[in-house]
Amino acid sequence: MSGPDLGGRVALVTGASRGIGRAIALALAAAGADVIVNYHREAAAAEAAADAVRGLGRRALALGADVADAAAVTAMAAQAEATLGAIDILVNNAGIALRRSPEALTEAEFARTVAVNLTGAFLCIQQVLPGMRRRRWGRIVNISSGAARGAGVIGVHYNASKAGLEGLTRGYAARLAGEGVTVNAVAPSLIETDMLAEGREALARRVPLGRLGRPEEVAEAVLLVAANAYMTGQTVQVNGGMHFT
Ligand code: NAP
Image 1 (cartoon, rainbow, N blue to C red):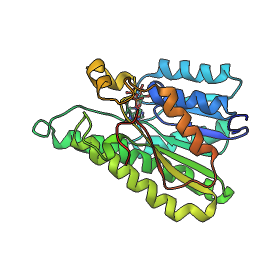
Image 2: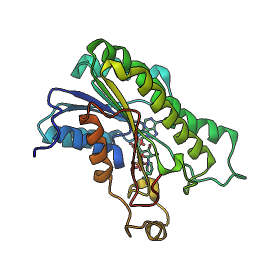
Image 3: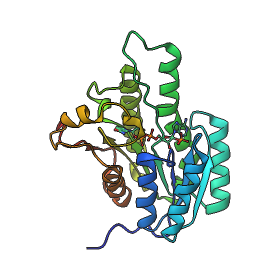
């Protein structure tokens, strides 16, 4: 059996300069898609990721934008479409994870986390949705977390932002099901990236599989839902067996 075929599709992956987003960009490119590599601050890393996409024979464009900034997201979408064409696949992967105890967490940190992890996804969806509906084809994949259900290691602000993202996923999925646009979430836990800088060995011991996950393993789940026309409103957990809900 050959892998998913996304030939001729254009994908926007937010936060694709590093970690899980970079792996998703490369997996989409390997399946045939051209890719916009969004980043916030790490321009050189984003250019390197775009070069890696080109190395797979696809077109790529690195575009900086803070996904929480509506004007920046609008400008990014316009430049992306002018350069690579209409966006068929949106992966809302950009996220921040400030580790805070409930007592230490400030209102500003709560607001910023929700702005990036949840409002950022909404802003990107609003940009691509009219075109997807017109063409009656679209795939939206939101990168959630096991923290949408469990406590996790980050904090309540992160729990709230990811639970909200899954509500957003189901809300759009229900409204778009008849229009060829699917909306799903992929919820990883404990994946080896910069986000997990501290205490990796102790964290790995919590995972029934006995190790942290790899970004490529999350990307495989994204590809699965991006290639499937009959699956919508779902959350696919990629968590080494940590829970089965
Ligand atoms: P990471 O290695 O820290 O990378 C984060 C990415 O998001 C970077 O590309 C960063 O861009 C980008 N980003 C951050 N803030 C942004 C903003 N305001 N606008 C645009 N881009 C922004 O994180 P990761 O582990 O790959 O995480 C990716 C996603 O998976 C996140 O949504 C995270 O919550 C989720 N997740 C991760 C884990 C895990 O164990 N790692 C578990 C569950 C869920 P720059 O490089 O320019 O800073």
